[in-house]
Figure 1: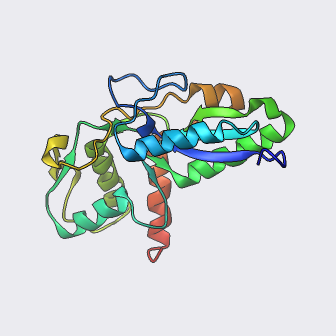
Figure 2: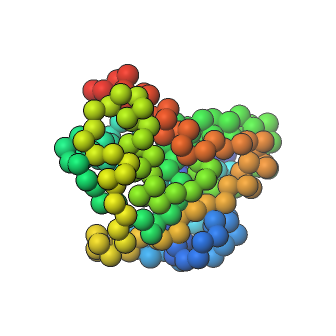
Length: 209
């Protein structure tokens, strides 16, 4: 990319941070990944940043219409079970792949006119929730759309991360401050609930995806 003068776009992760505190992470905060995945994403950031023209978008909790993801899993479980248990001490912003695609296209359009805007930005839907709150909102919206579910938002029970031990530590605070992106590119990122509603509508209309 450097040799031919191309712009290099790279998608990074909240996992480059250690997840401490409650304040949303800024681009200027010192990284401190907890896992091999987080270290590999940070190494990617550093490598891509050596390209003079780069756009690095750090995001969180990504889901899309296709493939496996958290909301698909929750819907499947809610159809089979009357009660679910979901972690309530990890916080972030569910971000749709569609939003990332739209933001990327908008940024590329402006970068073509002003290459000096290239750099590192945080990009996630606005607002924040726990995985537990995410699951409750999902079931509430799905039921409003007519989904037949055995579980309800009220029967999604909160549990600590220790209830589901994993080999790799996950950050408790995945909030990202996206104000730098919004100011630079003239954007207003939508609330995460709106993206989830669009996703649900899409898979309701195309259930085989």
